[in-house]
Length: 226
Image (cartoon, rainbow, N blue to C red; front, side, top):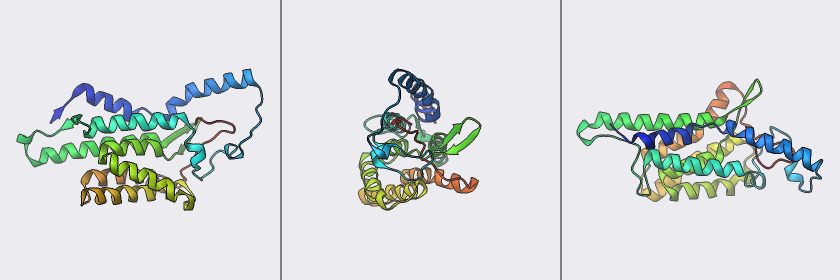
């Protein structure tokens, strides 16, 4: 197995650093705003949502800076792990090692990808564990796994059909199918990496079903960055 050590370390940092840990800085900034600015009148009612609302509202999600950080870091980590854009993969099988080594490398990449999505899906609220749909993280990760064409069309497609989807479980289920469908459309056949990202996209849904807890969108009143 060929391992680009520094690149592999960057992959693990980019993909396995939990989104939940990014909230500390945001919480500090929000407290400073409250002390300096006092109470604010909410002029946009869609921002005044109850925490745990199951709907995914584009006007809310596209205004969260942390979502774009997820998109960029997952895209960079995905490309570094799987290769693309003239970047060699961080893990590669030695051609002289035979088919078993190639299968082992593929399995390791799948495990890293799956664990990354699971880590981003878990949210700690004091002593309570909740589950969150890492939408933008998955979209960035898909760029590295299946390429920008399939990833971009699946991303656009899911927001187009989101109006008829009532919760995050349905959102991610449809998104996983769109990734598989567009990969087959652009490549002529369903690829193994597409199956990997499809399963990874569905994993938060499966996790929520196993523990009998819904995937929730967490939004504090008047906050744009959650």
